[in-house]
Length: 456
Image 1 (cartoon, rainbow, N blue to C red):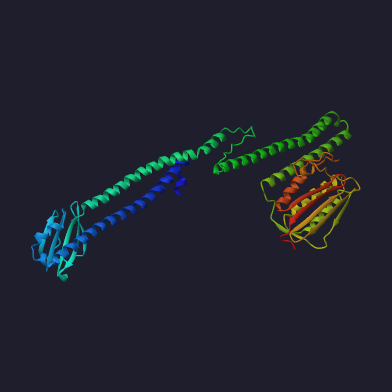
Image 2 (cartoon, rainbow, N blue to C red):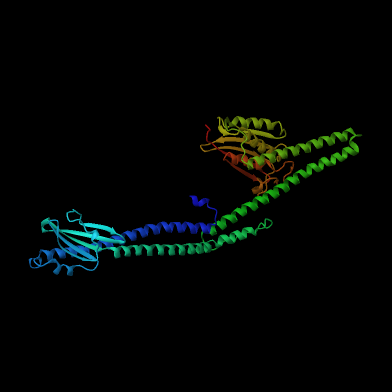
C-alpha cells in the first residue's frame, strides 16, 4: 500500500510496480532453475562416479586381476583430476593419484559416509566410498569437482545478468506502454485545461475504444451536464427572485414618493400608502421565508426530531383553520373513521397542508368546493385535496413544481410560485409521492402518498 503514497506520475508508478513484481518473479524462478540445475548436475556426476566405483570393485574382486599389483590395472580406470585408494583392514593396499592433493584424503581408520563434498582452497573435491571384502575394506574415489561448481556458478551469473537486462527492458517497455496507454488521459487533461465555463456546450471527445477511458469521458460529460444544468437553474432562480422582488420594491418606492408629495397633508392617502407598503413588505417577508425553506431542503437540513402523531387530527385542525380564511368557499373533510398514526415531522405536514389548501382556495371562485380526504392502506397513507377551481392546462401541468412557475391563465397571481416546490420537497423528504391531476375548467386534485411505516 505504500506505493499509493509515492508522489510520482502514474506511468512511473506502474513501471515501478511492474518492475518490483517482475523482480519477485525472477528471483523465485531463478532460484528454482539454479537449485534444479545444480542438483541435476551433481546427481548426474555422482551417478557416473558411482558406476566407476562399481567397475573398480568388480575388477578388484576378479581373481585373475586381484593377484596383480594395483598399479598395473588401477590407473586405467581413473581419469585426470581423480584419485582412488583401496583400503583393507584399515591399511592402504593400493593408491593411484592423478591431481588430487593428499591433504583431502580420509584417515585410514576413519569411518566415513558414502559421500563427502569438501573444499580445499579454491577447489571442491567430491569423495565417494564403497565397502569391499565383506565390509573389512573400502574403495575411496576422489574427484575434482571444481569444474562442475564453476559451471554452476557461471550459470548463476548468466541468470543474474539476464535478469538485469530483462528488468531494464521491462522498465523501458513498461514506461513506453504506459505512455501509450495514458495518451487518452493526457488528451483529457489538456481538454479540461482548455475548458471555458462560458461555453456550456463544451464536452470531452469520447474515444471509440470502449475501455475505462471512454467510461471516464462519459462520466465526466455527465458531470458537466449536471453542473451546467445546476448553473442554469441557479441563474434562472436568481432571475426569478429578482423579478419577484422587483414588483413589491417598485410598489413601496411609488408609495414612498406619494407620501412625500401628499401623505403629510392628506391622512387618507398616508393610510392607504402605509397599508399597501405593509402588504407588499409582508409579501417580501413570506417570499424570503419560502426561499430560506427551499435552501434548507437543498442542504438537507433537518428541521427537528421525528415524532409519531395522529395524522387525521392534524388534517382536521388545518381544515378548520382554513375555513376561517376561505369564507366564500365550502371546505369538506371526509374523515376515515379510524385513527392514522404517522412518524415524521409534524411541522412539515402542517406546512404541506397549508400550501395545498392555500392554493386550492386561491384559484377557486367564490361558492366553490374544496374537498379533503385521508385514507390508509398497507403501504401508503394518502391525503388528497380536490377543488372545483379553474384547473390547469395540460401543457402547463408538468411545470407546476418548478420554482416561481404560475399558470398563465389563472385568475389569481398573488402567490410566489414556490408553494408546490416546497410541497414536493416535503413529500420527497418523507420518502413519499406527490401527484397533481387537473382538467381545465373542472378543477384540480393533489394527491399526497406517504409511507405507512410506523402507522397503525
